[in-house]
Length: 361
Image 1: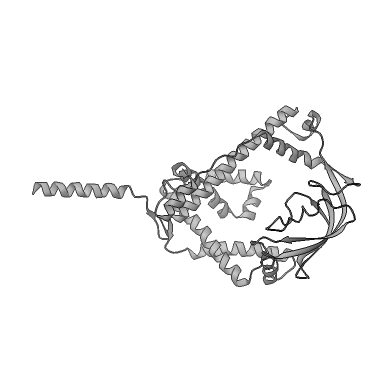
Image 2: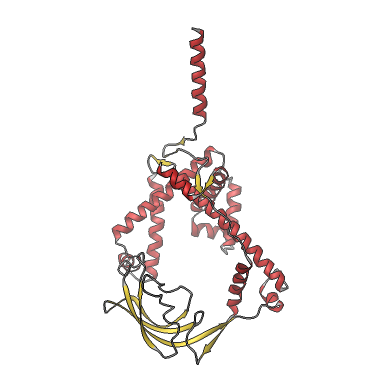
């Protein structure tokens, strides 16, 4: 008899021990099934090389570049060209396919690139002289903002009006003194840029980790029901933003959606509802985890973070910043970042192939 009682006690203790290992947390709206050891793709910090430093410096120098008109030669990659063009598909002009006096840097990738047997728009201008009028054919990508042109082959009649070379200023100590608050010499400036790129690379990696781990958290979160007031509030924010855009174009809302977003009102409502629910789901998950793991920032911490956000956004008046962006949205973002930092510490970074293999089981 004593042995049976002992076995029962041991069994109960094991059950309690296993229950204590569960990561599941819940409230009236959601259940988070797991939040520790979330698997995310391995993310490496981008290496800062001498070439990337030089590229960044040239980007700064280009702000002071001078444009010189070129005559006596054909257009080359890197030149800026002044062009007129008329685009047609099946012999008919299409919306947004024609313009005059467009300044285009060849090789910038601003226009349609190569696809299949068709060369890119910009590379087909190379080799032409000022005054040339010629036709080119391009194929739009299969995924394109205008669904009517997705995958379509179009003809462009082009007139090359002018060719310009962009002349960068020389990187000298004098230029550095005029354009940097920290450096006085070229060598100091190169080190300043390298350090800035290192910081950017670190921040990009942090952002990528936070984004991945929050996505993983949402995968482990089940919704019981949505707080309808929060979903409606998010829906209204999105709707108001798009309506302001429509007003800026001087169009009725439905006409704006059809013309510039290539969607019907029904599509907009469906996508906005889904987006709003996803935002609220993320807010609920971060709110619950912050509460359970004592991660909720204090009011003082919120105010300090918002102050920093306002300064980075160029606002002198913090209250105006809160009014324009919404204090609740700012607090959700701050909480979300703190929760993401916690999750990153607990996550497991694995090769993408390992995640795919795990998902297939």
